[in-house]
Image 1 (spheres, rainbow, N blue to C red):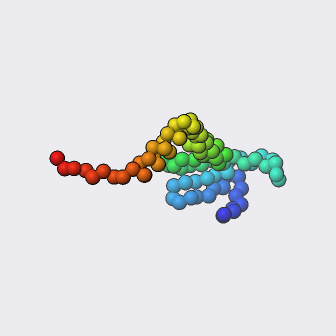
Image 2 (image 1 turned 90 degrees about the horizontal axis):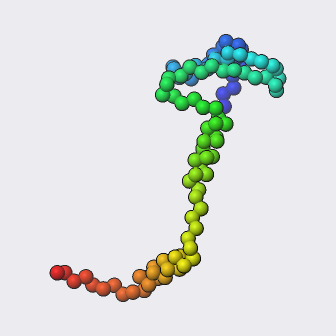
Length: 95
């Protein structure tokens, strides 16, 4: 991780087209709050990390759907699969 020190109205550049500027500093020490300005092309998505993390967690949760199969259906499917494995294959007669 690159760690930089910047003062009010100073910027950093990421590539040729993304600029991050310190626009306000309030407080000091652990209670300091910094306001950043970000200039980037419209096709670049800029998100706060906590919002991104929430979206990723919600997407993962929506994919993890619990499926309940009735026991009778499960037995029938397994029995059918066992019968198919044990049944001799009948030759296919050409017409």
